[in-house]
Structures are given as structure tokens and as C-alpha cells.
Image 1: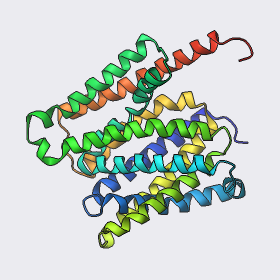
Image 2: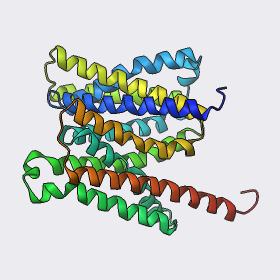
Image 3: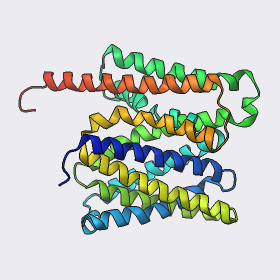
Length: 304
């Protein structure tokens, strides 16, 4: 049993966010060479190495290979593959910072789904956050609507980012359901295996020949992705999810840093402003969601 340690959890989460931003930067560059299916395979297959080592060191390898709900793992794995596919398309056409900001729409879209499907009625703070999030998206795509950005595929990247956020919202629901019966290690392993199989199947559509640089980018993305997952699991084991939820949005800082320092991406004022508005909206929704959950808990009948 890991002892609670909020300070260590925040350091681990910081490192995880930095590693995941580096993975996104690797995918952004690799997407110029290889098709998305090939990216999915390498990102998932190589990630198995750090995940399996981590699970084995914790003595959970046998436990992670057993489940009574294989069909739920399959659904979660396929949803996760869809998230990864749309994410990589987004990274192909957008900067790392913009693609990362779009991923923060997932909790907002899950709120809208809960309103429509579950007839939930969250408070005004959440509605303001959702509206603010979509204003941020408009700011981000505005240059594409008035300039030459459409020819550069920006709108394709934004559409993929929105699809990624929507499928991620569904994937989160499936993960939440799975954690009631299976350990996180089992979910991580099945996800990597299923995505590796799906990515490998795309070989029939043609893969790119990899030179040394392309191979390093793809293998590096897989290792970084697996390490980021392990680091975040360790962070979650040491602190409440509520503490890490809002902190996760600081990942936008690392994403923009990789854009500027390593990729040489020139960030325009519209994109940065829109991305920061989306992050602020996501934090606001997380805050409002916490208050809404507390309110529902207080209103629930005793013993429910």
C-alpha cells in the first residue's frame, strides 16, 4: 500500500505531464513520415515494455492478466484506440499546444452528455465553463477561418481534436466502470495490447519505410507514453484524484514549451489566447463538477 504524499504526487504528476508532452512532440514530428495506424502501433507496442516492467516490480503481473470482464476491456481498448487515432491526426495538423488544449474539452463534452442522456442539471458555474471552453475553440480556429490556415489542414486538426475529446469522454466512462472490478494495471495492459493489434492491422493499408530518425521518434513516443502512464499511476496512488485533476491542466505549459524550443513553432496570439481560455474553462468545469458532486452527495438519501 503506497503511503499518501501530496508533495511527491505533484512532482510525479509534473514529470508525467512533461513526459507526455515530449511524447506528443515526437508524434507531431513522426506524423510527417508515417501514417496514423503505424504511429498507433509503435506508440502502443513499445509502451508495453515500461508498463510490464512496472507491473512486474509491483508484483501485480499475475493479477493484471486476470479479468472476469474481457468484453469491457475490449470496448475500452477500442475506444482508447479511437482516442489515440484522433489525437495523432490532431497532432499531425496542429501544434502540440493546440492539440493538447483541445484534449481538455473531454470533461466539458462529458458534462453535455450527462445533461442530455442522464438528465443531470449541473450548476451555473459548469455552464459558464462549458460556454467559455467553446469560445476558446473559436479563438483558436479564427485565423484558419480568415486566412490561409484552411489549406494547411488546421480545420482537419481541430475536427480530429474535437472527435478525440468526444471519444475520450466515452472512454473515461468505460474506465470508471472497469476500475470497480479490475486494477489499473490490468486496464493499462489490455489497452496497450488491443491498440497494438489494431495498429498492426493497418499494415495492410501500407506503412512507411523508417530511417533511423523516424524509428527513434516512434520508439521514443512509445517509451515516453508508457513512462508517462506509469508516473501518473504512481501520482494517483499518492494523492486524491481531486488534487491532481486541476493540476493536470498545467500540461499546456510543457506543450507550448516543446512547440517553441524544440519544434520551432511560431505561436500566434489567437492560438495562445484560445488555448489558455480552454484551460481556464476546463479548470472551472472541474471546480464546478466537484461542487455538483458534493451537492448530490448531500441530497442523496441515507444509505444510498
